[in-house]
Length: 287
Image 1 (tube, one colour):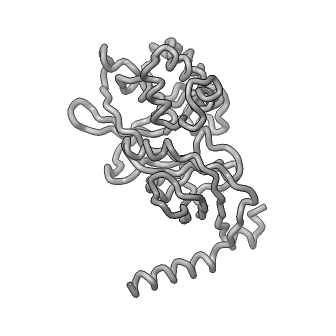
Image 2 (cartoon, rainbow, N blue to C red):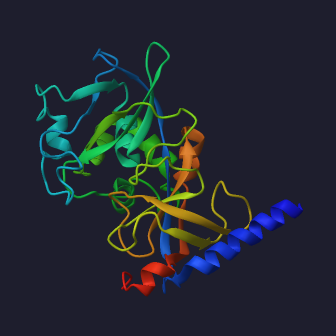
Image 3 (spheres, one colour):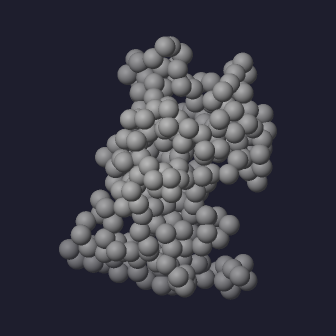
């Protein structure tokens, strides 16, 4: 207990010495995301026919950092706009699972021989992201108070025709790459190139908040995190197409469907305190 208290005191002294807190004046929106685990195959078959694509020329993240439109939209790609280019590298059985991998930006894929392949975001088509959960509520397909991931997924699978049409309204399309040499015990790679840590890593809008920055999140009790108010230090280590605006944060919950269920239920207001390095403030790097 003494060692724990000493470590806690030392950590507090470190942050008080080297960082200055800045509290966003208004509450922001907190959501959750996770790493799906999905069955996949390296060869197309009648059962496994839904492809995930590598980025076409000009769409890789390093080639298109401003995310300009560089490829057809979702409906056009699903209709075969990228066929014949050799970009398909893995195939899923379920188009809904593929859609949620696009939304989450990473996944673990279980192959037929028992191996796992990890994939990560490699680029996007550049078309704007649209929340189909919000559209489902606006169109009366789901009730406003029950439009979490589980309910949306159930609707998409129960009514395949309307579900496919709804998914196509999100014109954004994500491309992937295989991640090799990454520990199976570590979390997926975030935008900063470091493994994400469940409950400690957050995706933010990098136009408003620099990556790598420590954040203190203050929120009411969140699903999956106990009955007490959610108050903890996190790190800005990722970005996302839907994570836009000051005070906006997407909390990484973990890997697998239990984490997905929790992540899909997080839709809460919360306050964010950014911890800015004093050295950056002193040399005028922080506006």
